[in-house]
Each structure stands twice: as C-alpha cells, then as structure tokens.
Length: 152
Image 1 (tube, rainbow, N blue to C red):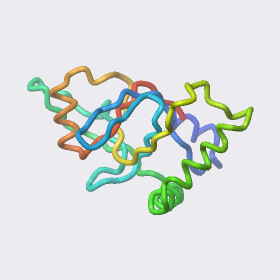
Image 2 (tube, one colour):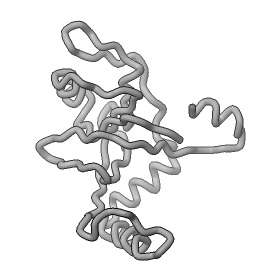
Image 3 (cartoon, rainbow, N blue to C red):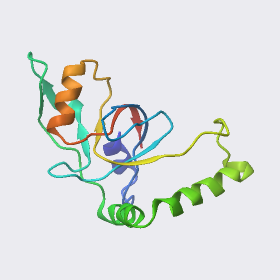
C-alpha cells in the first residue's frame, strides 16, 4: 500500500502507519487496547519487524528475511525529543485535546492514555502460536505490539 501511495504522490516525504493491534504482554509493560505504541529503533532492530516478510519454520521458530524501512529521520528526531522530555507534557497536551468537543474520545471517563515506545511487529495476520510469539519477542527485542491491521 505504501509503495502505491508513493507512486501516486511523488512529493510525499513521509507517512505514518496506523493500525489496530493486539498487545504482546511482557514483564515490564502492560499494553491495553487504546494505548499508543510508537516504533523506535532498539539494538539491531529498526523499530518495525515485518513478520509477513519472514519464514515460519516447522519447529515454530521464525526467520526474518527482510527488514521494514527505518523510521524517517526527521520524524525520529521528534519522537526522541518527546521521549527525552517529560512524557507528562505530551500527555497533558493530548488530554487538553480530549476536552475539545471536536476531538473527544468515546472511551470511559476513567480511561488513561498510555504511551509505549519500542519495537512493533507488523503484519497482515495474527501470530497464533504462543511459542513463535515468545521466540520472536526474545530474538528481536522487547517487542511491544503486533499489528492485526494497518494502513497509511
């Protein structure tokens, strides 16, 4: 989809991929539906692991054949700036927007917006095997999220 957008809009410099995802729980992060997850590079990973671009082996392991493109450098600079500043400033900004009638979320009044940063698994199908998910989390870093559907 992104390749078609770039072909049709040659002056477009960057895009943001947005999707609905299922959380991959870990001992350090509890991710819930509605949380915001931002892909940032960690270790050898560029921030997004495309599990559709790999091979699932018979022993339920996963072998990545191709990496997704890295986060666009200007966008990564903004993300790093938000990360290094106190997250509460950014959250307060989002909460103020939530009070505006045109930007109000339909969630319950007690919902708390939570931001997570790290590696994201991206693909067009669910990873149903718990063993494969765990192995991928271990191999490609403390992955935070897997995409079920995505778009630009």
